Amino acid sequence: MASHVGAARFAYNWGLGLVGRRLGERARLREEALVGGASQREADALAATVELPWSLYALRREWNAAKATLAPWWPANSKEAYSSGLDGLGRALRAYFDSASGRRSGAKVGWPRPKKRRSRASCRFTTGGFRVVDAHHVRLPRTGVVRTHEPTTKLTTALNDAMARILSATLSIEAGRWFISFGCEVAREPCPPPQGPTVGVDVGVGCLAVVSTGRRVPNPRAAARYARTMARRSRECSSRQRGSRRHARSAAALARTHARMACVRRDAMHKLTTGLARSHGTVVVEHLTVANLLRSPASRPDPQRAGHHLRT
Image: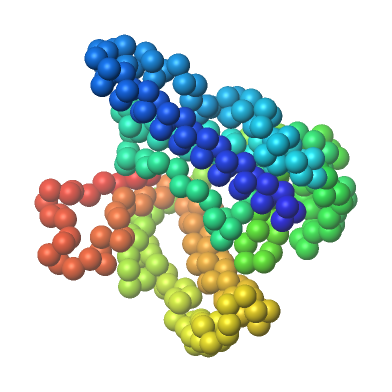
């Protein structure tokens, strides 16, 4: 599994370097043409002769032509691992070019960055022999049958009843734990319209949320809860030599603590939203950027100009 996510990262970084070199070649040809007395239109036409593989199809074609000499070990992994990295790069490049040309709304998208070994590692399978074997086992391409910690009974029942169909599988790792996420097409029965009163929710900083009924939902305060544990494991990690086994164990323990804090936050938010959705027909949430409330008074936006928006 580590080899597959590493192959996806390798293909992503290789494709990003290839696109960067092609862009540099285009800029060099354009500059040489302009220095030689060509017009801007002629220089652009000359630069366009250098193919720029920014789509998934073009990146796959370039990869298939170079993989034999570039990565002779590529048959050890599923071809979907490399395609997953190239697909992520294609999406990132498309977002950058659309943002630069004005076709994409919102904040400006920057140039894709190379992925490091400490970045989020994942790869996606869309073809191949991936499936759910039974309630505690799944099969992945080239990896084989893997036992799962969580039971897959609900998904297995839907598959056996022909109520679901698996479309893709995403393999990822977080704090030393491997996760497999199945993208499925599920036939669901139409849900009845929500019943119940209307409620308003105000997201705050001192507490997680304030409901219009008067209920105040406290913050989970995961950072304060695990402050002593974080401090102790950070000291252990900093006092041990980098590259040693003890440093690796301390870093893994610190990463597990960070993951635990994130789980506590997600659990609190999930319980709040699920309870509101089940007990109320309409939920109105104030569209407010909570991060702005943490700024100093001089840097906060003017409330008269910013206004308030309600999102239902």
